[in-house]
Structures are given as structure tokens and as C-alpha cells.
Length: 331
Image 1 (cartoon, rainbow, N blue to C red):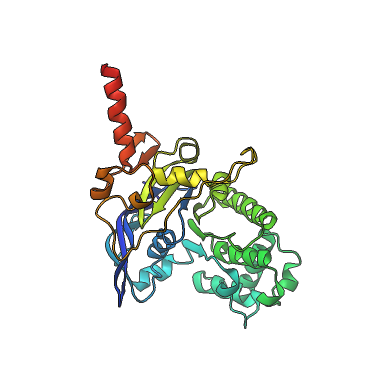
Image 2: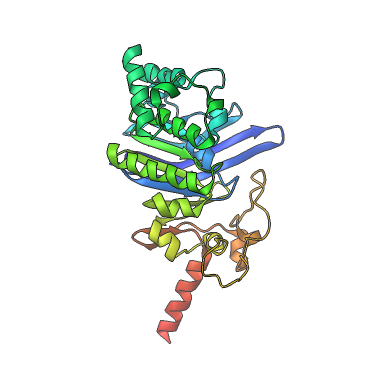
């Protein structure tokens, strides 16, 4: 049985302007010890999917329908008492901005100890020892001294390490990392990713890595979900997504990645703007930005098609290519 099973998840935000359908029919599994990458541009529904799992949506947000099962426990409608036992203890999250996630008025040690005391049966001395141990694990130098310091005394990379330590303090089964390296420079980013890989191997947790950086996905993930307009347009192993992309949006993402051997050629950005989630179209949401869009793309959405055992894509181009291949074979 999968550790996490998400089925046909729909999450909306109800605003004065109308219903914003942020997540539309998302389904996936996460197995023990695996790393799942969720990629897509801003507004594609990546973070809202994570917040739906954690049940930490804004007051205007609501899971409209669908199922989220963690270790056999249904989380949708489970109630705050159940979620308090799971949130932070068995499923932890690292937020995008460590500075706004840490309280500037409390010391690092107090914040780490608070999380440990809240979710475990440890006393204050045991919580202190555990906090120091976690700071050592994430390679924070002089951890006893750092326990007394405040967030403003840490660099961006060090604050991110503290957030990772806090998220891992209770040894969760799943760590959700919501763009954990966005605000960091490339050298610090590489160090943080290497650290996460090492810790994941040591304690065997599963990771959901939410990012718009395909380089991060290539370094860390076993399986990849590509999201657009709140839905999954492609899903497969890391190799399949990078070397055999089968959705026009994924192909566009790949064309926009800088490479060392592009021979001075210009990058090819995806033209147009993201879809308005208040007014989703009848057909494929990517069709207005797609150079290969056909008539059917404008009127009917494509269900996810099985490309092979490790790969699915919701793109009419796969149907067209399949028909053309069969026609060629008949000839």
C-alpha cells in the first residue's frame, strides 16, 4: 500500500470575484522512501496541493471533493484533532521563505524546542538535546551557541537549514519541501539539496519536492508530476519526463532550460500568460499557448494517456501521433 494516496482532489478558493479552482482532479501515489517532484510555473497549483494535504488552507480555501489517504487514514474531513497528531509529527513541511517562517522575536533554540515538545513526549532537557542534535545533523556549526541566537543573526542558507532541522525533528514519514531553495544562491542551493538527499537516505522518509526548477528535480527526484492550471498534465519517472516529454507544456519547459551546449542559440520561452483559474476553458487549458494546438484541444480535455508503464500524459498530440503511426503501418 502506498504511504500517501491522493485521488481526484479538487480545491477551490471562494473570493468576491468568484470560485478560483486552484486544484482540479489531482491524483497520485507516494511510496515509502521515494522522492516525488511537483513542477510547474507559479499559479499551477503545486503549493495548494501541498497545503491541501496538510489541511492548512487559507480561510477562503476549501477541499471541494476528493480523497487524501495517509497510511490508510482519510485526511479529508478528518478534523483538527487527527491533523494535530499528523501535522509536524508524521508529515512535515518546509515553507518557501525561511525568514517569514521563523519568528524573529524568539531564539532559534526556543522555536526548535517548541516543535519537539508539541509533537513528542520529551521533557525540556530532552527537547534541548534533540534540537542540538538536529542542528548538528543539518551541519550548523557551534549548535549550542546557535540555540541562543535569533533568526536575524543567520544567513539565508543557515535559516533554511534551521527550517529543515525543525521539519525533521520528529522524524516524519513524509517531508513536503515547498520550493526550499528559491531564495538561495546556486552554491548554497546545491549544499541544501545534497543535505536533503543525505538525510533522506539516513532516516528513509518520503519527500514531496515542490519546485519550478527542473535542475532540482533532476538532482533529487524519482518520479515527477508536471502541473498546469491546477491539473496534472504529465507524470512519470525522472528519466521519462526529461528524455521523453509527451505533453506540449513539458516540452516547452524543457526548451526554456539553459544548457552548456546551446551554441549561442536563444532560449525558447513559453509564449502567452497563465490561464485564469476563475474562467477555465472547456478544452485543454494550455491550448491558448500551444503552437501545436488542434481544434479538439480547444473544446475537449484529454484524459491522461498511458505512454508506457512509467509514464502518463494528458495531451491530444499523443493520440494524433498514435493514429498517424497506425496509418503508416497499414500502408
